[in-house]
Length: 165
Figure 1 (cartoon, rainbow, N blue to C red):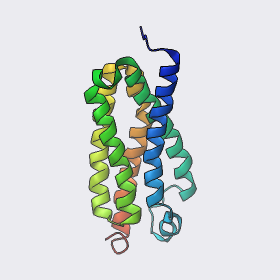
Figure 2 (cartoon, rainbow, N blue to C red):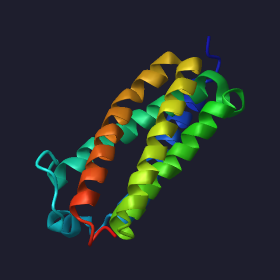
Figure 3 (cartoon, rainbow, N blue to C red):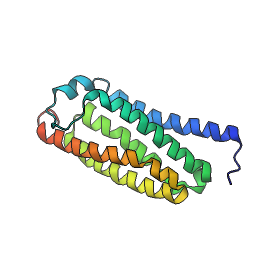
């Protein structure tokens, strides 16, 4: 049974959501001018339109934040140190990809990094599942989208060796 007072739990939820959306904001800074760049790239026929990324990522960051909160709420940071540390590392890796691909236009490095991100998400899911199964399940859409984004990164990089170095 969870003994945290209701206010502490709500403040924790807000905190984990804010942290998740801060990572989104860091990525958004890197992709502020990405619309024009993305439209100029040769993309595979299965690439989604640029406008789809913001709503998908917004939903994913919401799920990511709730998942972290569930683990934190169940055991606190100290009680789930490995799971929470993995969460923080994957959050940094998530923000880094946007800089590599859109700001620095390093396609090969962005692809390598997103594979690392994928592995970090899997590790985070497993660690979250062990603490709170629902938290692991909430990361499934994130893993699915990053799997798709990995394929899209590879395909786009290979179709654009000049602009993506």
